[in-house]
Image (cartoon, rainbow, N blue to C red; front, side):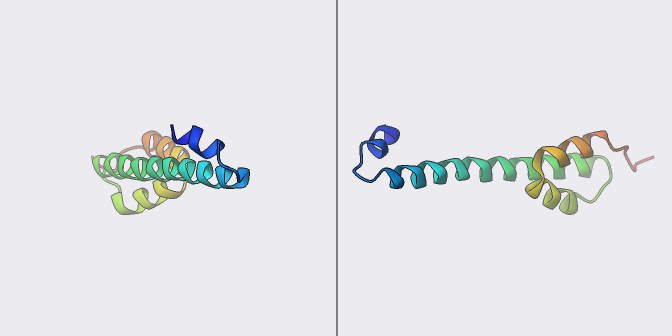
Length: 75
């Protein structure tokens, strides 16, 4: 519905801004979710959850793969 309203507007450049904004919101939500997951996994492996969470916020999928692969510090 929003898509139809945006594309039906008289200013086509406004449609691009709105749709890019919506896409950005989904990317931001995905980054926050990846940061939380990275922090949880890091904490269970005895690593610093805050540091890994920050890395997960900026480098979502790459950090998630690395934190899964690294060995646990717990003995």
